[in-house]
Image (cartoon, rainbow, N blue to C red):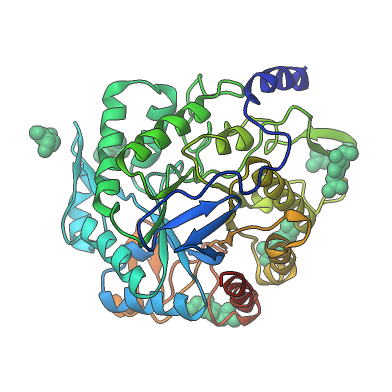
Length: 433
Ligand SMILES: *[C@@H]1O[C@H](CO)[C@@H](O)[C@H](O)[C@H]1NC(C)=O
Ligand SMILES: *[C@@H]1O[C@H](CO)[C@@H](O)[C@H](O)[C@H]1NC(C)=O
Ligand SMILES: *[C@@H]1O[C@H](CO)[C@@H](O)[C@H](O)[C@H]1NC(C)=O
Ligand SMILES: *[C@@H]1O[C@H](CO)[C@@H](O)[C@H](O)[C@H]1NC(C)=O
Ligand SMILES: *[C@@H]1O[C@H](CO)[C@@H](O)[C@H](O)[C@H]1NC(C)=O
Ligand SMILES: *[C@@H]1O[C@H](CO)[C@@H](O)[C@H](O)[C@H]1NC(C)=O
């Protein structure tokens, strides 16, 4: 019954998927010197191909000293990293202001009970300005996300998640859109002339469901998220004709054919393929102003059944399949794709799994080539501010000079894992000449 409903609805929504590869069909947009653009399934800078290994670091704009910011970029540069992905948002509640001022917490917006007020000061957007400009000094380009689907582990209700709930449940409510768009416009206008920006990202991991519900209208087949991506991407394009735009999504599909796995003798329909999350990777990537695709991989958190007796799939094999599926979808769309976040917990798991995933994504065989890969997340040691120990936002802290570790951070001293990515960066650099 469920399969029938999904298949019937998805037929309506698969309007723009092309059957044959259309590689190189979309001509490069003419952009100012140093800006990233696309040619078919690849990126280009100044007419040369651009393949990269990137770093995820949401905490970099939360640092308070230039020395720590510079040292972090220097470590990234040393590892061959060409792209940084970070958050272009950091909002606090008015009740948090006093503590924020005392602790030096970075915040760009504050909710004063009636509206969002911008913090265009040294503890606010100046820190983001500094990250964007310092990135250029180290030859690194920045992917900036406008908002999040997930609440920060804060003492109050996450404001970013609240914003998301309002977006999806009352998609067209002008008062909210006005506020959200005003912030997006502030950020885009601030950096739109900068070649240091790689791309704008509409939302980190947009889903119908997050820490807060997405509202009754955000269900499979409603196209709510697709409509939102379209509205937002068109709006950003109206402000900035040159920078690339992407979704920031996890890459969920909405496929007609049921995809699943066998567990304990039962067929389990797979959330990542059946549209329940709200995304439709194929349709979303076909949008005119979505220039490239993003997807994430966290099988251990998505599948409690993984690697257990009674299940027919493993951590490594599930990831390999997900990589192939997205490479194929991107080829159908004739646009680039990046593996924008991925993580497995445990050092042994990392060294056991990452080389296979990275090799497949970077391989030129079978047209599976990815333009970029970005492990979650970059780890830095030797940070000096506040003696290397400081709460940087809510529960996230620098400890003994080390950047926050959610179990996925990769520090330079973990050389077996670190070297997987420094080697990958060399492979990407060789393809970029
Ligand atoms: C919130 O900020 C707006 C704009 O700065 C201001 O007009 C309004 O009075 C503020 N409200 C409160 C409760 O501080
Ligand atoms: C802001 O903080 C106040 C006081 O802690 C709390 O009652 C309120 O729910 C918070 N608002 C949001 C939107 O998080
Ligand atoms: C799998 O099936 C067995 C036998 O029916 C049952 O004991 C077990 O709890 C099931 N496992 C899960 C995770 O559902
Ligand atoms: C598990 O079984 C399903 C159903 O037969 C199949 O579609 C899927 O590809 C299998 N997964 C793996 C990793 O073998
Ligand atoms: C390694 O992965 C397995 C399979 O997902 C998991 O059960 C185990 O907890 C992981 N190890 C660590 C240290 O996280
Ligand atoms: C590497 O550095 C991190 C962060 O300081 C630390 O937690 C870890 O114990 C160090 N050593 C190894 C082998 O991971």
